Length: 281
Figure 1 (cartoon, one colour):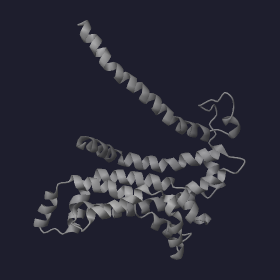
Figure 2: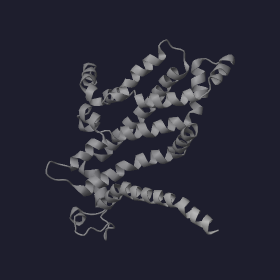
Figure 3: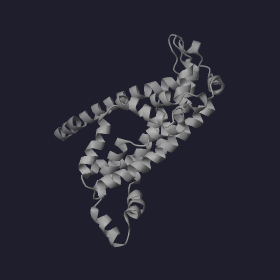
């Protein structure tokens, strides 16, 4: 009996150690978020008191009011929502269609074309930034939302993700649909898309989050104040020598809310996608 108990303890010991490590890393991950929320609820003077109180004794909510007046926050917010939603929808549709073609259609040199296309994943965006800017400028789309949307329409990651999912579906499904008189568009739209809800949800979350947080591309392509996104607007609280931490953190908290909402909306499908991938492996 004692041997069984000792064996059980030895078996559970790595589990508890792993749990401890995960808790420590989770707290380390949450630390910046907790500091952000705490800083948004106090004045700058109160923020740098030593020792620091994580829970403010007096909640300073004026930061959340002033951030709407200090910069055109509502305009920046609407611009960010508009660009993130449009690009996410277009990118999900285009990536899914391209991925279906790479996975299920008979195209000459399909694998070679796919490998060449995937080199896009290995190429840093900074290396194509100048020629891409020249193309957008020559089309007369510089300093417009259309120009920014144009450069974000394609995603090598999105095509790769959706192609791997479509390849996991049996080809017999396509053949049966063709026998029933379906063309490729009907097969893609009525059969493949409903089956790929989990992968589409994953792609939507990643794309929306990336677009919402994008800073460098809007900085290059959007100059007018009425076109700027939230990430560019928050930069106004930081100058070369000073930083208004209270307003900056309040604006950041407000900017985080839509991303959390999108993740919670697609969480069930996202977890399902990860779990399904694990089962396949």
